[in-house]
Length: 375
Image (cartoon, rainbow, N blue to C red; front, side):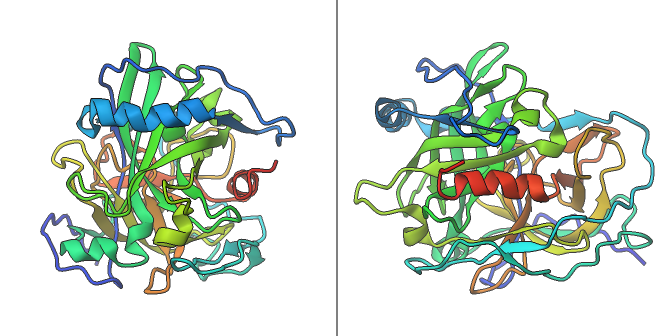
């Protein structure tokens, strides 16, 4: 028997039990930064990036101080099916690879190593029919926001050029282990607008954000990375993003201050996840972090784009949770981001299901460019 949990109650969360997220939306914005798209000089052909000048980086902090984070709203993340539903069962083909999590100040190596973190490659006869079971709750009490690895998750603020003008948005993201100790993993649509083919600007990350509080300060972006298939064509299977953050005013790198989750690639589809996010569209307000505890539901049966098949879990988070990490093997010593809140279907209507791009060699290639900013 399949049991469906749709609860929205607040639970006293412990560091070993967590989950959640997805989102963004428009508001008029006056400041403007980079409108150009430029790959790095030695870029991998399908990876694209945007570097901010020092003046632009300074302007980001000034911008949010002037306009306020409340001006950033969630964007609609619903999509329409491109084909009729049909069965999937494509097994991962790449080498299972992981980068280990790192506690605050830990001199962890960011070198990818070969490891399969459980989870069968085949999805045959094991997926749920919609809606799948999940539990969702608010991270509570407030002290839990300061506990590692919870504090490696945070809220993202940024501006974008949209067809109707410049606007401010919110997303979610996760600090992941990197050579530069500076990296946040998030959705591609948080770092670039596929409809205008332009990168985001005024990008600022707040780890452990709670009701306007920033216990570890705010961190501005120095460079954004995404896939050309996303920014140029809006391919949801390649809706991937990384953000390189500047050091704070004390000269510290974000990974050294809050720690980092690990990140995993080419793992089996059959996983249990803790999904972190800051949903801001109704019935949420973006003030607190929400978590979904869920397991693999199904491969996306509606998307026919090129690339590895996205996977879904049961979760009722809304816009604003986009980019929130799906952590497998979550624990007191950190876990591994193996997906993120990305999109939901409005046609057919499936409000209790969230999809993520599959973290394959495409995600690994983008990570390899961003981990030390050399590509």
